[in-house]
Structure formats: structure tokens, C-alpha cells
Length: 254
Image (cartoon, rainbow, N blue to C red; front, side, top):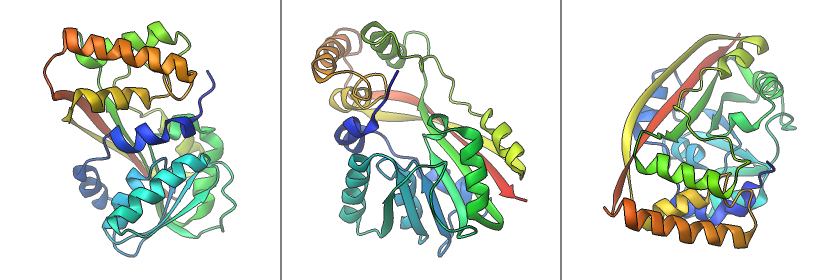
């Protein structure tokens, strides 16, 4: 399945829940996200992690391969009065100077990278003893819930999509970090419900790789009509409370 997240930028920036404040609080215990830190956010998308660190006083550079995502990210940062240096570039070969950053982060994107190459590049970019944080904030499909129903509908419209049924744990990223020479690899997670109106949940699902990221516009529109009907018939409560799991993997450059 070929995915272009640039096609999802509008829905992504309007409807996708950002990372919760608790994530940044937990990361601070690992020395990640302090004022004045030089942070590089890989695969920044609409800048959810980048803006969160900028709010806390970090000096943030943020990369993405999709110019549409970078434009949306820059608009969101400007609306908050935040300074973030947004640049077009890939995680595996950034072109940035060696040892230039205190922290490298990646939010909701590491699984799209060449993991080994991205881990090696992150280590190159970090100063000695610098830190990396790979973060996710995933919806949770549970029997009979709206996530499971929406995922089933995605599969019916796009059988090539295979990212359903996930549990929000991403410990498998640790192998690439260890091979690249990172030490003190640790992880944590916590769950929370996110309130979505029907409109926002439809937009959130449209923004996914399985819909706007890979289908033609007419196919996206057909899916959205079917999704609206599904929500009205089976999940009439508005707003919906959608369970999510926040997961983070941290490590230190050896």
C-alpha cells in the first residue's frame, strides 16, 4: 500500500488528537524536553510533538518529507506564537550536522521509517549522552467499540490496509536502537479516553493511512458517507469517548 500523508494534511491538522500533557511530564523525568534543549523531531507531521516541546521552551527543529504537512504544522505553530524550525527532509538522511542536538524525537511515525537507518542517523545527530524518544498515541480497538467498527469499515473499503487490531505497544523499536548503540533503553505507557465529536472522528479516520493517505478522492468520499451512517446507526452518542494508549520508548546515546 502506497501512502502519501500530504493528502491527509487538512484532516490531520484539524481532527487528530495531539499528544497529552502527561507524555511531556513523563518524558521530563528522562531529561527530555527541558527549556533551551536542542530538539530534532523526525517525521513531525503537523508538529504535535514539536509544538509541545516548543511550548516548554525547547529550541525545536522539525523534519518531514511531506511539504503539505510542514505547511499545516507551521500554521498551527504560528497560531500559538511558537517558534519551530520546520524543514523538509527524511529521517534516514537528514543532512544536518553531527552532534547538533540534545534530543531526537519521533511521534507516531517510526514504523514508516527504515528503522535501522533512522536509528543510526539519530545517534549521529545526538551529542554524547543525548537522548532519543519514540512516541505513539494510538486508538484502541476493543470488542464492540467504535474503533473496532471503524477499522472493519476501513478494511472493507481498502483491503490493502493492514494496520488494524494494534494494541498500542511498540517495544519492537528497541532492537534498532540497541543495534545502533543506544543504551538504557526504557519504555512506559498509559491509557486515556479522548473525546471526539462524530465530525471529528470521521475526520480522524479520513486522515489515516488507510483512507485519505492511500485512496482516491471519490473512494474517500464513499467511505466517509458509509462511516457517517455507521456512527449514526451504531454509535449515536456524540461526543464519543475513544480509548487511546500513549507509549514512549527512550534511550541514551552511548
